[in-house]
Image (cartoon, rainbow, N blue to C red; front, side, top):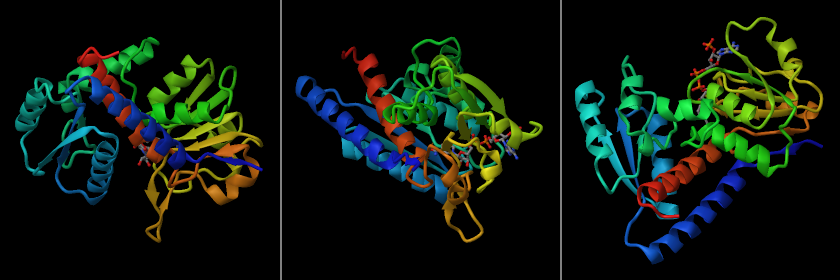
Length: 285
Ligand code: NAP
């Protein structure tokens, strides 16, 4: 019987542990961890993500500061706000909800965030530290995936991990994290040839593609561990992953569901990063 990796429950446990730690810190100091949450425009999916993040802050004792900006805000004004937040002592983490509306070069805003407040772990300094195997603020979804694999005691050293997707947010950093854990990592993308055969070589398959139920039984090595990062709407408007869960389930040894798999872990890792950033900036051990 395959293990269904319940990210929702694990994420709730992590938030409970963080809440306890924050409550203990609050007894020692009047300082409070603060997270700035920037949303540009009113994309409904982004609003749901932003609200979930603010709710998680409230649940565990992080002060969230919402900045809801019009879609038409100029690049210059958005950068000016980030610059102000970089110097605001109440703010320890800055989150700019992506994607931004319009055809903006998002990198300029990510680069504008002070690396020590980059709780999404997307700044090139943090990405570079990860690449070189150093301590850094980790990208939240990859950190959530690693935490989940470890929580379920799934061995990584020596395993062949196939990661499909090479985004800066998911594919590249998760590959680096797995490498650091001594896995052998293969990265695949839209130009990869003979993808199903390649994926069938994977002891661990991580799908971060953004295509509903793209991964069918044909991609799975019997007994593999499958991590489904995708969040997609199918033709009926239902949220589904990149993996065809029902057809793949009989083949695998462990799998994450969508929803309630990787998604909730991402938010808990954002909370953990905010607490880490707060402790580092306020010199709390
Ligand atoms: P992205 O930036 O659009 O990257 C998608 C990657 O998938 C690209 O590298 C692309 O290859 C690859 N790809 C696309 N079609 C492919 C195909 N037919 N065969 C092989 N590779 C293909 O997306 P992302 O930000 O990484 O997100 C991926 C998915 O994860 C989305 O569904 C997103 O909503 C979800 N997500 C979930 C969470 C969470 O918390 N659960 C967090 C972030 C993202 P190329 O590079 O060649 O174009």
